[in-house]
Image 1 (cartoon, helix red, strand yellow):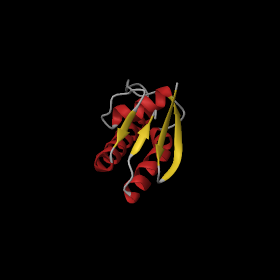
Image 2 (cartoon, helix red, strand yellow; image 1 turned 90 degrees about the vertical axis):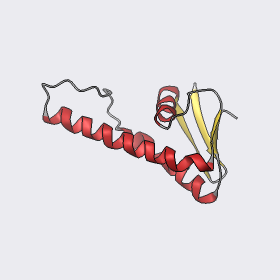
Image 3 (tube, helix red, strand yellow; image 1 turned 120 degrees about the horizontal axis):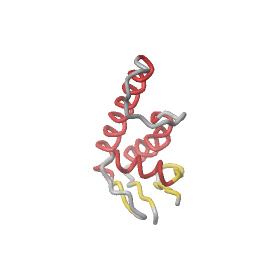
Image 4 (tube, helix red, strand yellow; image 1 turned 60 degrees about the horizontal axis):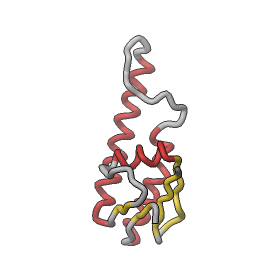
Length: 105
C-alpha cells in the first residue's frame, strides 16, 4: 500500500506504507486508509516531526560515538530528516495557503 498525501496548495507526496505510517504515528494520527490533517493541526504536526528528527539524529550520533552501546534506531540508510522533508514541505505550504492535507481520498 502507498500513502498519497494531497493538498490543494502543493504537489502530492507519495510514501511507502511503512514510511507513511511512521509519519502519521509521529504526528499523532492513526495509520489508516483515509484521513485528514486540518490547517489547525499542521503546526503541531510540523513541531512533532521536527522533534522526532532531533531525537533520531541524537540517537544516531550517540550510536556512532558509542558503538558498543545498544541504541534503538532503525537500520536504514535514509535519515528521518531526509524522509520527512517532502512531507514537512507539504504541511508548511498547506498551512501558508490555509489548506488541509488529506490522504486516501
